Image: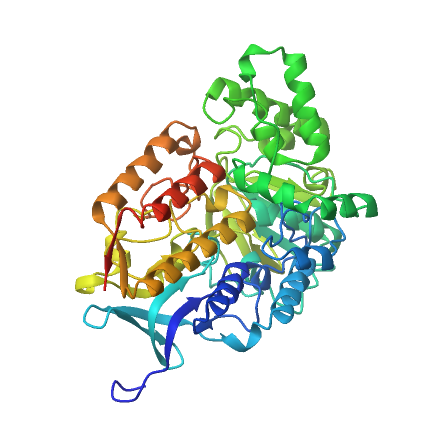
Length: 537
């Protein structure tokens, strides 16, 4: 579209039609604002639209992983399993979109190529890859934290003659590996969930592991009618507890150090969390699990004991037992038969710390010791988390400054919602907010509600622009770093730190101060007429 042609004019462009983008569209429509959602995929769902690999499942219990904004919706929808599968979550998202009439506000199969701020008009020009330009007062990034997938950084990824797949972009028609020799590279969350499923089909399955990860059994099962009805009766109280909790998952508050109780008492508490399939219950069982290495070791050793107890081959068990990072500092996982899978004769583990991956060949994978031939290869190699999707868009703020230039040494935001020098741009669950360390549904709703209230505030006062001050942003970045450094998170090489992407600055990208504490801070900022922001008529 040329500059001379009139551009569609809206109050807001929302980028992404996942759980965040849909709720943001709903809230803006309630305000009477006009909004367009631009979505790269062919339908709604965000991460649950793309991630269709076998075994894909949420690691937050279904009764908690849902919208809280509509009591009627809570009563209408009935989950079937303790931990919801990708298909069930996608059905839920579609139900919400249809129930609240949201589809007509979304443009599918379209990517935002650039967003450029015009200081004269105090509005954004948003250009898409289809050639459309949109004029918007606000741009709201609902692009998700785990959206930009990455392949392994080894030569020859395109050389393999057979089909390759990435767990983050799984074919919607599914893949049948029956009778195949299958190689899987990566043992993060998607690998841990999918490997048991692949083992059911493949004649030979070889798993290439760079870093062993902590996983515990989800103990998934059908929900009982009584627990569904009990939650529906008590949803209001539960939602309040979620909002005030540390991770968006209410658990009893710890009162003791792991080091001041007996080993027997500790292991009984860890066993209770293990039996429930509750990650947060183990991670927060004691006051110092995430802050003291010796305390963390007690939980880590409990899980390593479980691995050795499950995996029959001692050498394989040792390779699967994480020892390079404190438990919880890389994303811990819930699994369904992951460790048991390695007891099958046709499943093999290659420890890349002992025999590094050299290259992908025409026939398969070459390590420093051996060549492996495969019919298909699956990359379960994760994402350029938190910042990857934002950096992929040409976003330019005041004085033409590029966002990726501003973030050259790591992401800088105010509250994880706003970026100094980029007025009227909001990031839902952005860097330096609790986001990936929380129940995402709780954090998404909190951010969307805050942004909506902010836009309403500006409208009532006929204000055209809101921009975080550099001082407020610097203060928040320093606070996030200080709180992070109090924990063990920075000691691990994880995607939380950006360490999984070569050349990416090593910065702890999430806020570990707690969902409830963070909410209070955001509410205080708004109550003080958006303290830390400059507002313009």
